[in-house]
Image (cartoon, rainbow, N blue to C red; front, top):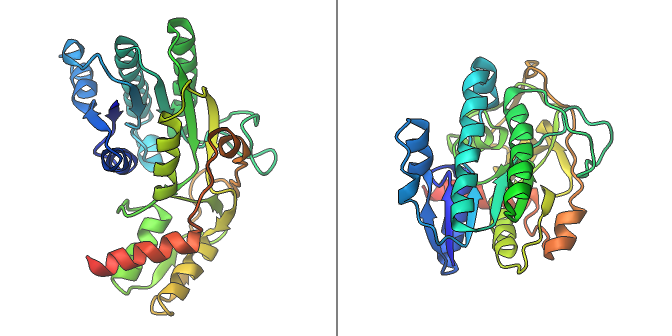
Length: 286
């Protein structure tokens, strides 16, 4: 099978590509076609037309930058999605859209796929519109569509401003762990569990179209995550708590993942402590 990927240079795209290559799939980066269309020098006619899947991970994903320049966030994320859909249509291949948390301030917990959609930042807003564009185009052009709403996928990647990335950096440098806000709770999924899910999704025939929440199924507060890292480093990194909550932040994002588990016979293997322990060991080797 030949799998086209956008965002292959990013955290999720690169890890998915690695897993696909390990399993013997042929991987084609579609990023140059996305960039060419953004620069008015579109070379879609040069794109392979024999892809078996198009996996769309490319996005401007920084929440802080989305507030600074919402126009860029909307334009970049929506245009790249339209180009990726065009590639899927030309290849007559199924399309996977990597969405995000799109539920705003939760009305109930855990959050299932029927929860009303809302946005609290431009990035989230761009994903909600992106989902609708995917549904409309895929319905009109008969493109099998899967939408994944990912909840805090983490791994061996340095992304300043992301909690786990910052915690691992502090642990690696034996520096104090600084929390701007100890209270918000998030649901964390280790990248290896996400890789396994993608492998299961693309192996299904026929494609099990639909919209799926993707997470672990349990939320942890910022202070709980920091304490796990502190325990794993045997107290070498003291925790400093400040009071600088993020603009329009959400207090809890616990996710219901029953649908994706049942549909794809998939279940996360790595607990948060297992994932963090593995990452700390990797950091020690670097």
